[in-house]
Image (cartoon, rainbow, N blue to C red):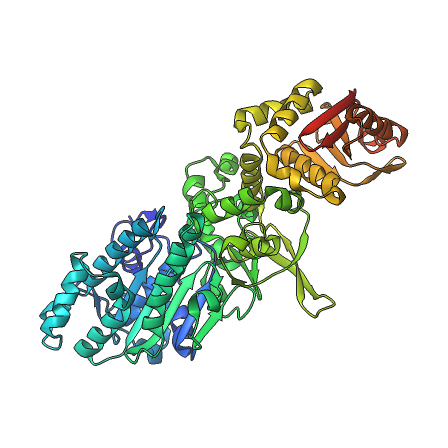
Length: 577
């Protein structure tokens, strides 16, 4: 009897299909083979498709490689597609095994400096040329060219030769087969993310741009090319002089949408084939929320990992399999870097998103990396959207006829994970233990402990105090909302809402009325003002405006009043229970 396996970590299409057709174990498989037809039918010489991490980009490129190549690693590809949807189109199947293919993934190109990243590139190209080492026996390849092939295999080629490597290999394959080549380049922007984080972006960008220019600009040996990545790096940064690139993003030109990620129908089918109960279908909202054109899409990596765990639990305990799989699978370094660099500017927006509210911002699909990216809020939200951390729910034009997008977190997995990222970033100056101790002190009414935490936190975060007078209270407001966002599972956190005779700053209302509620009023003091007096005024405002009305109507009997006054790295707290 066949045993169904889940393809966790499997990105080689041939391995997936051969296991699918085996007599013993087989992989559960979603048939995306009609992507081949749409790729062939598209008239693009060079296409760039951007999608979030682990949305099937590598698998789809591997599928194209197995379709067009006659053999891979000496094993024929014939017959792999016979039972798939694409087999119903004989005019497309006529292309199977008929083209030389260059398949290259840059997903492993990482390094703390350019030299380390360049060595990783040399290793990747060694594997590429070893895949085509049959060219060493070709009568149509000159001895001089064979020497150069060996230089790539033994890692002795110069940097300039790597810059022309794809053009060189295209030439060799054309000579050997008489056919122009297909180039499939996966995760093209991964090296640039690491280069940005580790401050060698310009050097890394220049090198990758040289490879692209030589491979895709006036390459007479090229038939078609498909490039995938997470971000659309601006043409001025990477694709300069390449006028033949058609770009497909999640916002513009959403062709191919159904082939990256699982559709609603595919997800239901996958859960059924894994023999999971109806309850699993109800829980899948943890991982959906992506919308492109008419397609609701699910994160395939999270769905597969969820199923892998869910089948180990009793039906009644299936909720235990709901975990943040995608966000914990790595690759978030650039997001973490940008949040850390501009937490004071980003915190209010992130807090709104965590609390299931939306933000509205302009979006630029062309990401220009560089030092300006740190501290640029619009660029940050653009990057989050393109990388799959946000989804648009509406857009409208502003007075300049430019679009403003209303954005939310797409699902609970992202919301929980970004909350944890904020927690980590906010707690850096005093450590996770100090942070959790302070939050416990807050909800338990241990005001002095919480005040000590605020003093320590502000003492070690001097960059926070560059805020202009106009925005000081807004800044401290956002800071406290960010700090308390971790309480959302047990408390309802509201900001600037009406209650009694006015609008409170922050309300932390327990979902269980037996717990203590918290009302916070903030003041930002000027240099000459007495902070203790100001905090008492804030406390008096809570009482005089009767802000407790909303909580009392919910049956909450114990309410902590906190009047907090800030000035730069100083804080005063007055309280009443």
